[in-house]
Length: 111
Length: 115
Image (cartoon, rainbow over all chains, first blue to last red; front, side, top):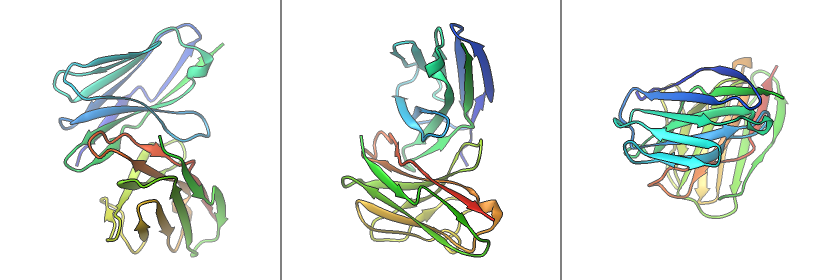
């Protein structure tokens, strides 16, 4: 079945440093979604990428979808303590109508 | 967005017992899903709750262990049957309003501890 891998598993940064998490799928995706889960909270949808090579920005967050639609990345510029949490990518196979989540990258930020 | 209410929010259960988790959505939704998230782990899809018919289970999950009901477009239940400590986890109800985009909204989750 479809597998979605995410690296790194953990990332510790100093406030102000940049952060990137990478997501790779074993199969070509229809689209990819990114979620953020704060400690003790539930996943919250951030964004969806649909087109090959697509790049979207949300303030300090930049999301990219690979040309082959099998990989994606999330980059945070100048991290803040509010960025703390686990970031999950989720690959979507439209035929199945369901999302397969990556393992997540847990970000901690030292003030 | 969608407002999703799950209960119980947490429970401590004895081995061998069963517990039913309820999920109520503030408006009709097409797709409802049940996920499991073990401590420090990712989200694993248990099943898709289908309105008026049997749920569609993912590999490794069976109806006898995780019976699911979905009597209408706003409500679903997940039962964890004959629980063992390995079932200790957070169970999350999730909905998608648009089957084309697949954007998911999650409930707060039900944290189960099995002793």
